[in-house]
Image 1 (cartoon, rainbow, N blue to C red):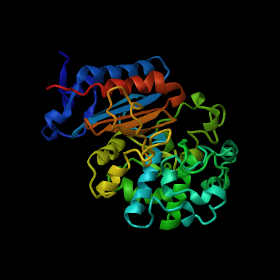
Image 2: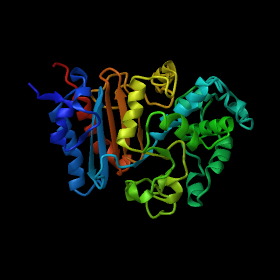
Image 3: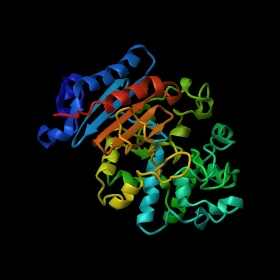
Image 4: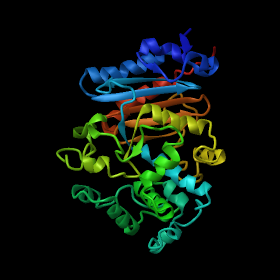
Length: 375
């Protein structure tokens, strides 16, 4: 029989800290396989020891307990990392707050809020399309590298996104698109009359106690955050000798890109995941929160929620088909499984193009399989 221990009882083996005291833990909900968690930890440490990984954090939760461990330069498990596309669900949450307030409907056309967005098929693109990757907008602009090289403000990305050619007729196909999330933030700014980063802090981060999370760098010092291993990054994101605009630059860290510019910790992201596992009215109406983590693209080529990825089998071997989450190009992954109440947050400095399959995926698989089926 495999050894199964309460989650808070694994702390000694992992060298980590509990998010709550022992009496608050519900035994049946917190039971996990210690050996699986230790194997996950060992796999990450091996990458650090071999010099391939600069820093990482792993935060695993179930029920009312969680454990967190920092690796390499992330001495503190609450080290702040650049999230990349884990930012996208945050942007979507902000939009759904506005929907709950009655200030927009997801069926509304985008041009209701951005009147200049009407040329051709653009007039048919809805808020739902830009939040579920069915708008026809591209992931990145053809001018992406040029814009970043000259340190263009976000407003220039918006202007070009409004005019950029569509890849297909809205609503007919699913194709991942960062520029849709950019236009979502523009809609929000035009409605609220305030910077989108401030809006997210006010309506999402603060209510959930996510005190170490910001769109852009916020009040944090870049030098105190984990530094991405940009030498391994694709040229599209500043890989190579592009220190003025790469992932570690002042420009990118504080641009506040609503598709990839947020910073956070494993602990804060666990709070966000737990909110969607058991939503209340702190941020969204519970029914609204639940609607974000189910497929809105039935009949199309790929499932997506509202901001969240929901494709069965895409997160880890032991996850149920109800699992939701997102990954990020900087080497990040977070997910939650409503069937088991298990949450997983892995943040690294090693870009996903080289870390996803050999590093992040095996860790996610081990953690997903750590749920005890029998007490």
